[in-house]
Length: 156
Image (cartoon, rainbow, N blue to C red; front, side, top):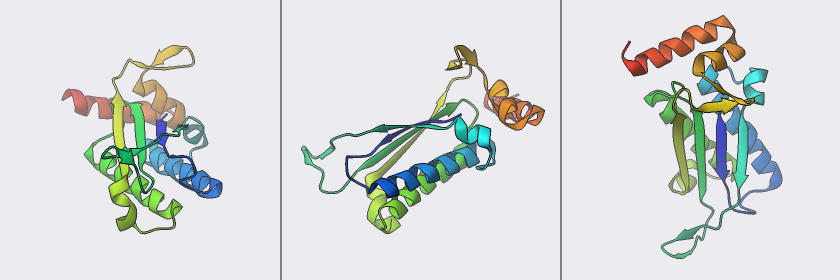
């Protein structure tokens, strides 16, 4: 159930490249969040909010596009390996969208992986917790996965 804020300057990418980038970002975040990028329920719960910023570097307009992605998920979804993988893979997806090389874009892509504390994520007019979320995507096994992830956080 990721919520992704994508900050991409106007005309930084072609419409087709941008659409492919959003599809790739959805795939990789869902893969790291619930383990299966083809899970249709997981994909439908992944929303990308596009922002069109004007970016300045050292007080002057940027000479090349800068990108920022804020990936917000319920608490328990990220560990350091998932954060690293998402950061690397989003950066690689931007390079692909620009038809460029990773070295050309990695200094212009920022990825912020944020967890929303359990009990403060709301959907469908109510607060939902990680066990409820993952069980809706993965069945009863999802509840077990969620409790294990949250337990590691709490030191259970």
